Length: 316
Ligand SMILES: Nc1nc2c(ncn2[C@@H]2O[C@H](COP(=O)(O)OP(=O)(O)OP(=O)(O)O)[C@@H](O)[C@H]2O)c(=O)[nH]1
Ligand SMILES: [Mg+2]
Image (cartoon, rainbow, N blue to C red; front, side, top):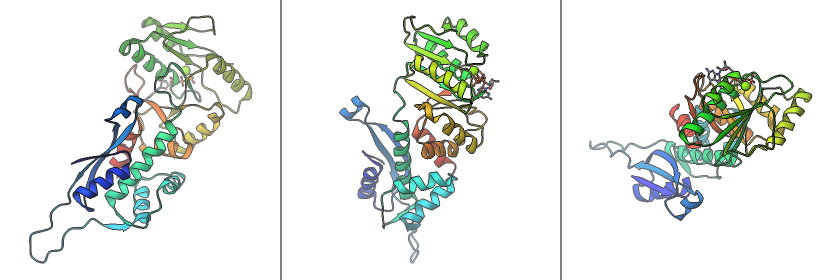
């Protein structure tokens, strides 16, 4: 049966009211609100639940019971089974409402799912709904130009947007010839020097070579180019196949530029939901898009919190 609520707790209360406290929640999903709230993008929680299996018919047999455990140890066990880092586990724990009542594993799952989605929403709040001036930044070789080529192909061919790409040099030259060739093939305007006098297009992409923020000269040059471009969507591009510690170091290194979100590449090599959640929870920054594979425009997706929550649940 389907139950809806504005929050996970509200949906769960309805499940219990109708099916009893041992009801099994089989899926938790966030969907656009059915009411007038849809107009301003309000969301609600859908919980698919079923009644517990009937007790065995034999005389004297004890009814099957879901394992009930204290609220804290139930959620802790689940969090540990997901393999999240210690900082993420602590952050989620702190965000849970204090409860002394016992939870079965479905209730603990539902409570954690609500906490994860809330953390994602908070982290993603700076990502624009419609990105018009997109700049991908990050360390060298993380896949910025390939992802830019994929994104602008989708905007041009699928969404029929009028696009321009700026391929600008840092202190070292930008070696993204394949991006320029690809854009020209699609009839997209390519600019290799900054010219603010050009009329704006409905989608503009800025492609910069990668750099290391500890190099102050290069960083100043890049910050200057970004100031001129004024992106409404500045995404830090990370190679998701790197170790979590390296990804976290790169997030810290680029945080002065206040990226609105992340773009994760190399999803074809590694698509660990644990890594994604450690970034979202530990650094308060969420992926806006992912890119998997070197071939254009394949494997470019805009995924949200529900997708990564389901991936996390699936690995239990
Ligand atoms: N397997 C795989 N390879 C990728 C992916 N994205 C990029 N690559 C490869 O990684 C290398 C670097 O990709 P680029 O897009 O040029 O990286 P970049 O961040 O623009 O590099 P710089 O501009 O030099 O900083 C190339 O050989 C790409 O083909 C991906 O998602 N999966
Ligand atoms: Mg590049």
